[in-house]
Length: 107
Image (cartoon, rainbow, N blue to C red; front, side, top):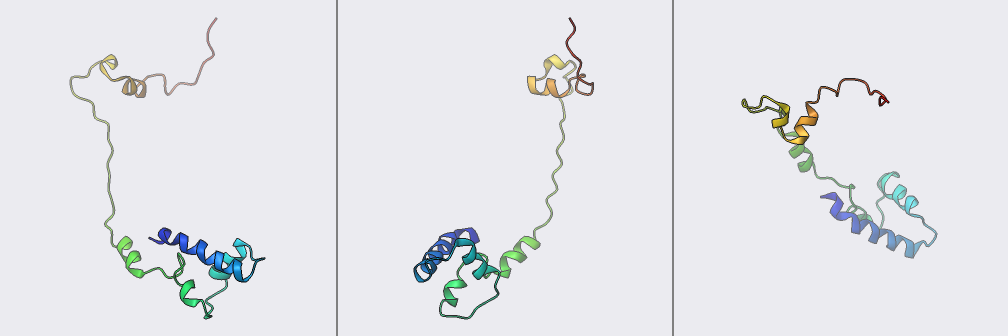
């Protein structure tokens, strides 16, 4: 939700550049995010910037989500007896050579 406010961030920066032409972007970010709250003429605009006033409703929604438990398992059908019956990807996964160290080619 806060990412949708990014255009407001850049528009407000442009307004600051009109008032103070030598202000860099990082100086602007530092002024609005790391210098505390300043109750000045553009306080209302400052509070519309992304991540300035995050609603606690979003925090509670994430906190109250039940944990997701996903169990991933590869099960083969009972009628598969030979690796040649498997699709190519699964045959590679079950290769007996995966656990052995690589050997140089023999001449």
